[in-house]
Image 1 (tube, rainbow, N blue to C red):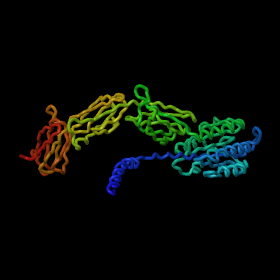
Image 2: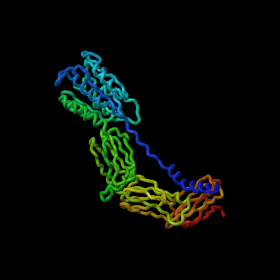
Image 3: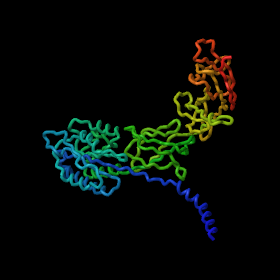
Length: 466
């Protein structure tokens, strides 16, 4: 009976082992962490905010509407808020252009602190917008996975001689923040702020309320896009290539995606930040690019790019040894000198359709020009199988190997000075080696020998004085 159960146990082990092994190699895809959105409200508490506007003073209306907005944000995940205020510490006159302060730093669940600070603000001073924006760079502490956004709420323009446009461009260029939002209260300031960021005119309380909601919606909501890599027939069939999205303004890398077709055969949907304008590079060989891609928040965007591709197969005739398989080739676009790829023989690579020049890094080098790569087809470039020449010298010395071509010698290789034997992989053909040992001072002691290399064979070339 024991023997029977042991057989059953062995059978079950054999049966279940593949299942166990398969379960071990399953890779659970990790959920990509969402970025933390950090919104810095830069709030105008200068003396002019005491002015009457619609139903109340500007400061009272702005405090109330921003506080109501904060109530709607308090329970949102992946969100941190902060408050910087200017014009609230020093009375005007005299003008104090350093009157700007981070009142509430970034933290989670700090909406109550921000609301309390807003209620306590008393407009006093001037309007140092450029300085406030510049100092805001330090308000955003280092973060690897954060979106930094500034919302400037103001009823006036720069009064301290600064340049808000230049400061904003500098912060964006350095990747400190995304393009800021500006809400102008009571008057159209678009001519002053359009170069700073996305400007919203709040000529009435209702427009101010709407502007706040639009700004927050755009700041918090990503949008979707798909990249259609088109073949030569205009169909989005090309895939499995990396795509890099750069911020068009700063030049910084925003996203890397390996292009994918979903289970319906359609390009996969990407989630992108709509606050950036993008420069897209698709890393085909050669790469293709698409500049100034703008997304409309909440709207799916299709990005079509011509990327028709075919295959280049480098093949060597005959039975190849591992040593012979080490030969590579430089691939260039037809008529151009820039190296696109260094491809090994025995490999197949994908290229944008067109004409290519192939330089085989053999001895001697082979040049195959005008290689045509067509859509979804494989073009094969085949070279003869090389042979091996084992060159033996009596002592260290100086010498070179030449290809014999119509009674002319074409240099292909210099022998190593400090060795007495070298093995060279050579294309089939006729060669001549010329050599003199370093221990002789008479040119007449030069030795030369012609030899022939055949595919897949080895030849010994002895350079000894007779």
